Length: 474
Image (cartoon, rainbow, N blue to C red):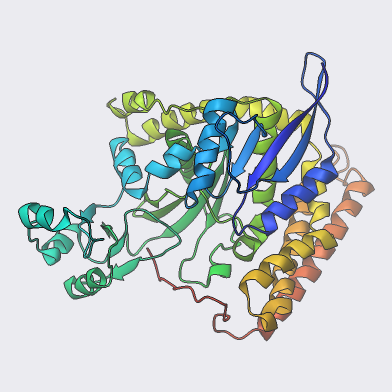
């Protein structure tokens, strides 16, 4: 069949750094993949435009990576057309992004037996005026005791919008008086009141991308650029497997290829608290050392979907999950079974085989890329967009040094392991020892450099163009 080109569209809003890194690395990969039946597959990526479109227009993309559906209606409707009429694979599913807000996700995961904190929905304080609004409220809206609802849920609690994200409109309330204040300030937002899981033992955020997962210890008390911590070894093997199963279950259940799940550990129980995030943070200015993992995940999953012509799952089929939920099994056994279904829906085995065969050099290439001026320019562009001009150089260097620490740690993790001879106990090869030295040297220098910069920074949170509210916990 010869050479065919799979086209990947990036549907973007304010995204800067991950998209540039994605494009740069894909160009460096310069892939031509043998996909069977004599077919050689190449890839072309471009950023989609916001333009009028005919419903019967010729298809333009095989895969679209979408970052606009959750707030930009025109692009959402174009993407729906591309799925239904053109067979385009889109991440994420636009119908579920539009309709499956936090309220639905809480209800669905409660149905599966997950330990979601006690949650109540509170009517809006104010409303947009509509012709029948007043008569409807006069006839059917009943007075309610907000303090009694708070007491039933339990304090401390969190008042937060039933949809949305980005910590907007979230208030921690410790008593009925604070709940009244939060409600009076909520305006037209439809609210949840959710019991606080406090004090908690651990707070994690797990990013899921197709069958790929990455669990990060999260500290919401920090400024935005420090909330994703660099701590390692904070989870047992069993807890990590549980968080990964929960995240993949949520994502596959709602048809989300890309989503993140926040969970709190208290008294040996993991409570998912916020997991309707189908356009998660993808910026180096918050992810720092975790950013390269995200870029690689974008590349691996989108290339797999494009190369294999992965069909879009347009229906959700929840019954297999409900069948498991209705069994009299321990919860951990149910969650493992949910995870198995979810990995099958994400073609985890075929995906891993594809990566092993066609993307074996991706790790080394990405490590090399994040030492280039092209990568540093991606960082600088993002910092310039959100930091005041007088802080751009300072924070460009800060995030750049974080990436260099990641490079050193990544290189060390992939270096040949030191092995001992069975006869002498000596290290087998000089080559493996020499290969490890540069990585240790880079890591030492990068850490020292980052520590020096950190010591020179003021202890208070840096000023940014738009202040962000810091919340102690959720």
